[in-house]
Length: 505
Image (cartoon, rainbow, N blue to C red; front, side, top):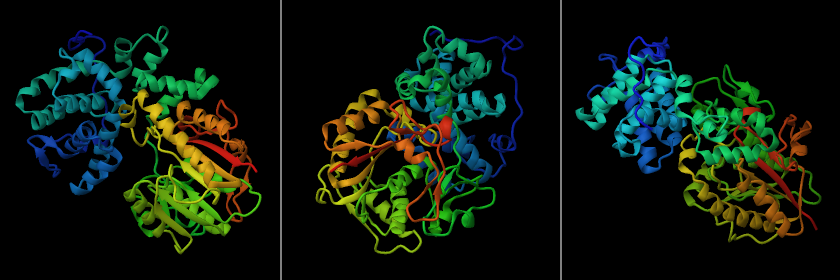
């Protein structure tokens, strides 16, 4: 597409200056703010966001792991930390949309630009199109950042491109840079909500008949900023006793609560709660809730790292009088599980954590009464928390993932005794990783019965012998109705898939 120059000053369509929040006003890079520079004229929150984008692009870093470390190392707190977070995550979420606009405003192909210049342009486009930072401040601070990371020769180019971006708001840009929705609905949605086209198609398949009315909402919800969700420990202090001011209980999990703001670290350090999405809590609770015939003494978390579900399962197993074995292929992830379990209240001898390949397990067949299998997957159900995942995965990755998932599920079924239950869980709604895997393995691994997972999560249910009660979770049947599928736009959770399978005698 040829470079779009936009209207001249004073012509219709020019983007006006919008009001700025206090956070925006505090971080425009003016001298004397006490925020420090990593390069001449580049303010620290924006430079930190740039460093996150560069690391994600060049080193395959994870933004949700890198950004907190950089904020702590650089002493960035308060409103500046909020700005760095918004710029990092917001730019990664909107990258596809911003690239479409930048391509229309640049006289050079984006793939020919030096990577630092492209990252600065993306940060500038996010400020112009999706925040209340004033246009002049967004352009000026981006030019300063471009000088700091790319040298003075690129500042004029960055200034020119971002001034063209600033001539329109996002709604005005979309008809110019996105396909016509009447002729190419998926292409339009891909640009409008910043997704690769193949993910839009995969979400459509996952929603089934509901896609006609819900696809846009599902994609939009994947760009929401999630609140921090915590899980209390079964058998520890009840959540009402540990919830900080402003926190709200989750709607269905009796252990969960969401924070209005602040740092969850003190709760985590005390061991009374851990960060865990409500849908992940429901997956562990669903496994623990299914009635069993016969003994209920030994549970397995087969791909347990980094330990969120293992922690909750341990508490549930302890209340049921059962022991938990947690395994992970990688020793460093097994170490995270040990750490998560060691911080729980009253941690004792009811768990064992081992390093093991679930495809070649060290345990004997039919050894466990309940097995949780949270398989490695594309992570496309947690894009609110890991926005770069949409750009890191390709459709061509799915066959190898599905092969691994099938192998692990066959092993999980072999580890489960007759009459026992396996929960197959993914943080992805994509059919190739969810219902296709489960139906293929269940049909080729007799004797296996696929249970009605939504029915387990739908009625108010007492959880084992614990005092907690699981509230009914609405609207969770997937198009294959025996499976449960949670969605951000329906449940304000990650898009977690849950299947329950019983080994029949």
